[in-house]
Image 1 (cartoon, protein in one colour):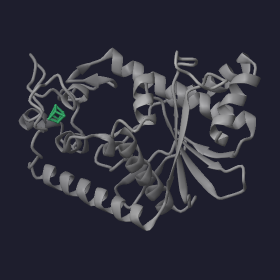
Image 2 (cartoon, rainbow, N blue to C red; image 1 turned 90 degrees about the vertical axis):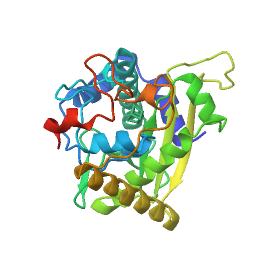
Image 3 (cartoon, rainbow, N blue to C red; image 1 turned 135 degrees about the horizontal axis):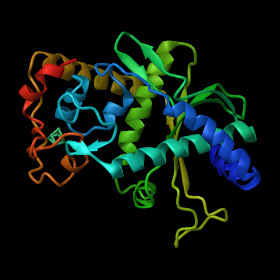
Image 4 (cartoon, rainbow, N blue to C red; image 1 turned 180 degrees about the vertical axis):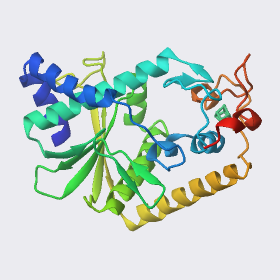
Length: 285
Ligand code: SF4
């Protein structure tokens, strides 16, 4: 078992509920504070977006609907399911950080949302946790992923491109963090956990469903990350001149990637279509 899994298991099994809840509440209070962001900055989360048009619109500061901000959106409208996924992720992060701090498997040096990195001059990272590893090696990044059980199984079985996208994201987190210079992590861990313990097919004694995937900082990773950054900068530069990428060719607006997108593929009532950039002109970044 990896020490991240041991920390979570020990924290959940041994800490009183009052301590767990208190630690999580403290972390969630930090997460609840407003975190203003400049949309034009390149962030690792952009790498997870499969559609260049959506990336361009986010970099231009386009809201799902022009001049109307809602935190959780899908297909151009406020969306409860998306909000629930965000709440699930925030709470998982709070649980992991609480267990790490309380159990001593590695020393927490910094964590989101208080630790953010802005460099060079348009890059921004939000590593979930920076930890001094228990074995005395240098600082490592820990990125917490909290998929639903179905997605977790597919990632575990290698049946989805989700892991590859997460590896690219975390490589960009590593690059930006290293560029800032305060910490020089050589490695990151993708730490997956779900909220469902003891699913019918469980094989673990604790019932916890977790997975740890290491990502190492290498020359190849650096080349890949530089390509990603160059590509996103080109997308942003073109969009600023009014030249946006073509929409994703999937024709069904209710299928991936359109179904998961902030924007609406063909428009819907007063919600404009994602390609109708004129509608967003007044709120350009
Ligand atoms: S709706 Fe589809 S084509 Fe439009 S930005 Fe989103 S993913 Fe891309």
